[in-house]
Length: 318
Ligand code: 13P
Image 1 (cartoon, rainbow, N blue to C red):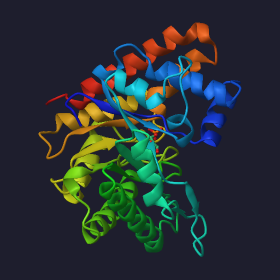
Image 2: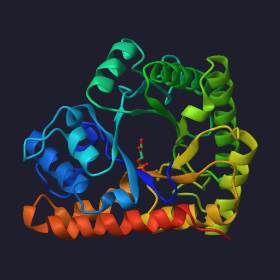
Image 3: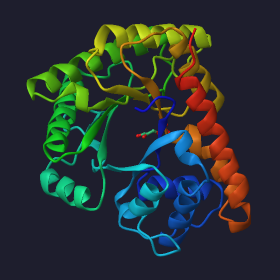
């Protein structure tokens, strides 16, 4: 949450990263995934805009081409390593089309191991999808409870938890529907965090923005997204929370940056409001890189440009 810095979410699971590679005809292997991430993390001067990188289990155990562990390499570059610890969103029994994020069994032992490997923060992503009938109160409650259990386990092990309740942009719903679902979700999440006595000062919230769905006929302006999102967080996120780092959720990169800047212009806000983007930081560099070593410099330049723009957006004032 250092001023002017954000988080790079590079914790895609192997199937998710392979899907993204496939679209660009990049072969997905242990080696290519390692090269891709080594290229990203070694971008010169990245730590000026990025304070932390979220890793996936495969990466935290890998070494770079120079034989250095990723955590060590990040540390040498002034960046803190984080780790995704959930094991994915799985069908919620009895509730068609809904998921609950799993990974609590054995989590204490796993986070202890990750701490030993050098991780200092963690991430758990809950997924809430919107349709005519969903989300159900059952889905919100199950996910909120799991998020709070995870957060408490992390704090006990000395890791800062990133609590990520993502309301998906898929569908045709309006911004009003997204507002209402985001509000219900945040209320449930903070109720559970309080119940489990999670230290709000020692956590980061990673929410989705309040937006119309990607196929909604009622698209709105940047200012409207910023106002609805900030208003929803002001009403539902306690001021004690250490910081908010937004996800991009599939928005085009320019939109994700413009929204962040417009939100910060509505400040001063009670918490630092920055970014923890995955696709909005990586899509362009990945297209440029395309699996070819000779494109690395250009891909790094693209990442640095996006990181710098979002850094600026995180400290823009009205
Ligand atoms: P996006 O910014 O692509 O939504 O990814 C952020 C993330 O960490 C999803 O869990």
